Image 1 (cartoon, rainbow, N blue to C red):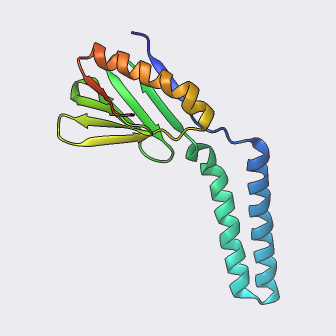
Image 2: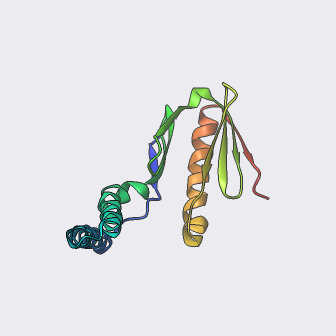
Length: 150
């Protein structure tokens, strides 16, 4: 079967990154001036906020990452800053589809939950495509799929 990937990530716009960078730089500069004036506590707080904004710019594109992919050997789940989970089809015993999440039962006795963090439009258009692809790959690998959405 052909590999299928659904990238549900929310793109981060350049103006947002520029805004956060500018805010961070202003806070750091303001904090440095505050310390130079003798207002040490406020200066340190402003520098901390500025560094928070500047570090946030580096992680922001990754924080919106949300991908589910299917291929012949693995089911891959990738969410935000968490580790990517590559689950072999051979290690899955059952998949249950709920209204807003998938629950994947592994043969080792653990469950992996994956939430559908979708907008209304994506929930109506993309979610059925994800479920159809998941069902097709699961059935091809002999895995039971239960639909508990009703």
